[in-house]
Every structure is written in C-alpha cells, then in structure tokens.
Length: 464
Image (tube, rainbow, N blue to C red; front, side, top):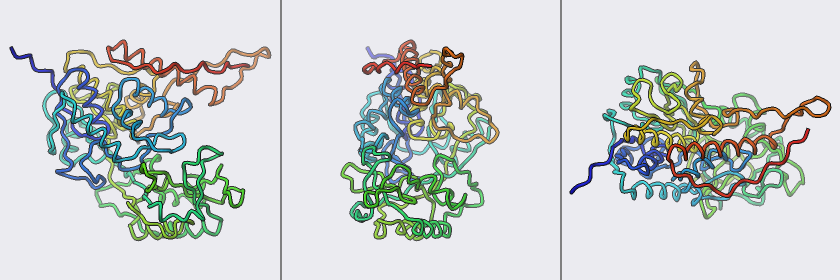
C-alpha cells in the first residue's frame, strides 16, 4: 500500500531566503521543489553555483543582547535556522560581529538543502511563476523575465537600487609595519587598521573623488541604500564624510604614536586561515584600474594584492507596503509569498529570517492551516509588520533595528517625582529578553519546534 503524497510547495531561488524557506517548509512535512538557475545561468555578482552565496560583506551583523541583529539571530536559532547553524559552524573572529568563512558557510547550507529527503532541487531558470503555493526568493538579481511576471501579477511598482561589494586583499601584501591589529576601545584585536595622517587622507580623498565609477545603462536608476553605500558615493557628500563614516578613527589607538589617527581604513578577516581580508565599509563600483590605484594610496596597502575587486550590481525589490502583508503573502495572490531582498529587506540575516517565515507560512497553506505572523515584540515580527505598514512613497529596504519593536514602558517616577530616562545599555537587554521570549512562546503555540537556550541573566534593576 503506497502512502499519500505530501502536500507540495515551490520555492524559487536558493539564496539565503530561498534555502531557509525550503528547509523550514520541509521540516513541517511538505514536499518542496526548489528552483535555482545557477550555475546554468549566472548573475553579474555570483561566482559559484553554491546555495546562500555571500556576495557583499561576510558578516551577518552584530551579536549579543545589545544588538537588534543579535535578537534576530537568537530568534532564528531557537527555531532551528539552517543559515544560523551554518554561520555558527563557519564563524571567523570579528569582534562582536557574526562573520563567516564564505565558502564553508555556503557549502554547509547547500548540503543541508540537498540532503533533506523532502526537497527536490531543479537546476534551471524559471521565467513563469508556477501554479500553487510558491515562495519567491529570487533575490536582488531577479531575472528580467521573472521580474516582469511578478510585476504583472502585483500590478505594483518595481524599484531598483545598486548594491556594492568591497575589495578583498591578500594578507601577505599588507605592510604590518604600518598597519596594526586592534579593536575599537580595546575590544579584541580582530581588525587590521591602516592609519592615516591629514596629508595622507587628503591625497586619498582627492584620488577617490577623481576615480571613475561604474556608468549605469539608461534604463538603470541609481538609488543607493544607506546601509551599503559605495565609498565613492559617501565621498561625494563632503571631504570629511568618509572619516566620520567607514574611516572613523575613534577608539583606534595607534601603538606607534599612542594616539588616534586622523582617519583609518579597517580590514576584516574573510577566511579561516586569515589569508584574505576585506576593506570594511569600502563597497565600491569603481572601475578596477582606478579601484586598485585608490586602494594602494591607503598606508599599509601600497603593495596590496586585490584578490577580488569590489563590484556594483543591480538590486531589485518590490514596494512591500503596496503589495505584501505581514505574513509575506502577495495581496494580489495569497498563494504566492515573497522573501529576502525582493520583499524589501536589507541584509543577509533579514533575508534568511523572512525566508524562514515565508517557508513556514507556505507549508501551513499547503497543509490547510492559517498563516501566522510573529509578535510585534520580536525582531522578525517588527520587521514584517514594517514591510506591511511603511509609507509606500519612496519606500526603501529595511534592516532590523530597535525602532521596529515597541518601546519599553517608562519607569515609575522617583521620590522627587521625576522620571529618569533609561539608556541603551539598560533598555536593550530588557527588550532582547522580552522579544525572544515572545517569539519562542508564539512559535511553540503555533506547533513549531523550539530550542530554548540557557536562560538569560536577570537584567540589572532600574533605579530612579
């Protein structure tokens, strides 16, 4: 006697969002057909056919109870996220950031997807959306044919901006007689810092200002997202803007002078062996010859060997508040769900988290259940509610941040009748605890398996 076939969904795209969506749905007992066009058809930014390939930074954001991304990481770990478990297993030293070795991370996610018995991977490009429940996670480089199909379905507005990746430098070509290892304000020395005096910075800025950048086609419109602004675009805002941004010297004491430099370029480790280092905040679309000349003006990088040049590529996303609800369903067709950058998020972690929610809700639809939305106190719930309710005029992708979740009630007045304003270090651990507990309780009530880590210590009492 043969058993009845499992309910079925389709996932389009095997990036962070699509991989997480496929695994979330498969774990709930549905069969998944996952379409990925790479390596049959490559994009301008990707270099492999591996799933969840990281093409910009190698960091999934800050960790810990003070960080908004730290809360989202904890939420995802609690429900068995494959992206988070793969990141934890591929972690590199990066201070308080969750940075990973790219190839190892991608390999782990790819293996998790391909090894799951409920997932069938199909290596071809889709140009039409399939019938039935589908998660669309085609990412920032959605093909033109499928993008046109999506826009036709929603009747909505398709927006685009440019995303840029930073150059990666060979460690052996960095002059460590000039550069020094340190973290800001005596944190762990996980970064390489290249100090600049005023004269060196001004020469660097002049070259950056004069360097030639990518010229878009007529049909492309430059709409930069603030969280991944190219260094040359930052420089256009004024000569001091880079050194108050990615080149800020605050907290970086040069051991040779005992002082903070005038400006500093930082490099973050890219691979397990420490042979590759990327310039932090130096996403760029400069032409490669000009890019090399600018990089080699940085003290300590005069002989830099660039292993991978920064590239600029088109990023496509939907106007989420016009076309999506908080469960990530298309308003025009609730059988279609959207996740990742295409849904209006920015960031690797946010892509994976919305993939998990879209995959979970797709499985629930296939099983005849109601869709669910995380509580507002959770970081994922705050993000998806924002996507539904943001002002659609001039909408841009959103990173997670503490403003997405409700503020804490004000403390009771003290004996003087005054209410003391709480600082970030007092509020955020409480918001972290509240959000994580709300998320795990919500997931358990929805029948989702939850792993509860060791309880957090009680927060410090708030005195007035």
